Image (cartoon, rainbow over all chains, first blue to last red; front, side, top):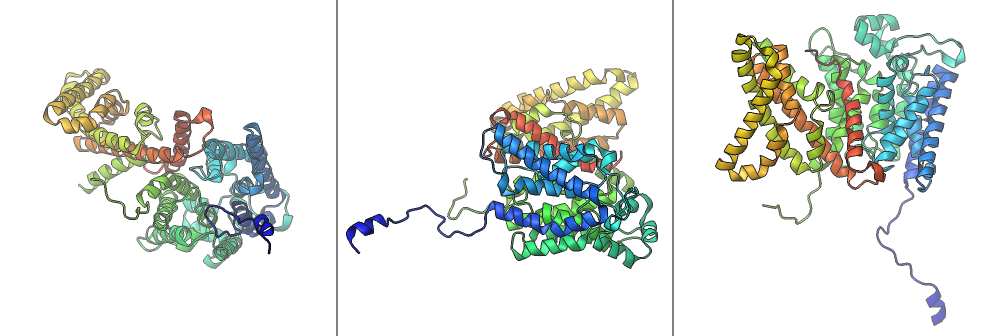
Length: 335
Length: 197
């Protein structure tokens, strides 16, 4: 090895981190989107072409608004990282299948431009964009956003039949009536598990969502801290206070499987940006979400509280992060 | 007795969370945006605000029920309550400066701001309109103060985080704070219908 050759093979000098992994924002975003696929398929199966149309419109308009904003402000076009795609997908999964075309577009605009880009883009948003998009739509178009249609498997019926969600029935007519409609308890649970019930496009099938969540756990994109404490707290409160024949007579399984609990707890509350970053903070975050969900479901004006609970806890997560800040090693407390 | 206790509890929860003055009635926004830039000022303001609120609504209650109602001049309540709040704030300002200059140095600047706040006038007016008892009035004032403190502390934590964010230039500072407040109000809409008073 002569001297010249050695010189040309120059050493690579770089700053830390030196150990790199293949993980990137884009890879995580696309994996999460892929993990939602089973639930999307079940939603399309039960709610038909209109569901596919609403989902596609959400995704296309979200990506379009992201592109437009970045283009106008002459920033790097980062739509390939999949974050706008995922926001659109989650927003679409949170809409009823019967929405007219302007609802997904308005929701996407609110989610991408107002909730995400105005705060500085990916990584700086305080609130979950898809959930703010949905909350905005629910408050602005309450009638259209609660026009639930009866699931009609495999495109059998073209006409949509309007009906109420299980939680809506529970709120308006009570538990006995709900059991009556679905036949018996076992039948109710199986309907909730497979997703053969009225509701948002992507939230109905608990099994499909659990499958996606298992994939995320396997890839270690989410940890147990938020989902488990969220669902656990909600189940505990549902069991203790949910029944109408005194304490400890509620039906926790019904509350866990219905509404947006599965979708919310595994895919939306666990958003890295809008949840606390410390593990102990995440546990507190999950407990808060579960408590607020059940408070709204049992006592509030809305039949479903997962969305509002996550959004309210989003407000608190900078505060939680402040409270659970890691101690600086060797620092002396100021007197 | 227990129903009275439940009423007081509901009043505190309702005033602090469900009908939070900042997020559902949009009152007191000038102070809210003014002092929520730093956590330190937010906490100082919260403490001062809650104590002034409780004392001034107590005084207003006494004046309303022992002067205005017997003389049948309740139509003067707005101007009388403004007088009570301003007088009390000015008096405590002067007394605090003489007795405890250290405390005055810490909390005094907030006192002047409070006397022109709208929540501090809204609470005695609501107390009078709803004909709350003395205990209920004080607990409503306490709940409102806690609610305002909560709003300030949440907002301060969010704004401190936003300082690092790449917010577009026209939206930096107060505009983005207004948007954050709107979005928090959207989240707090979930509480609607929780307690009807």
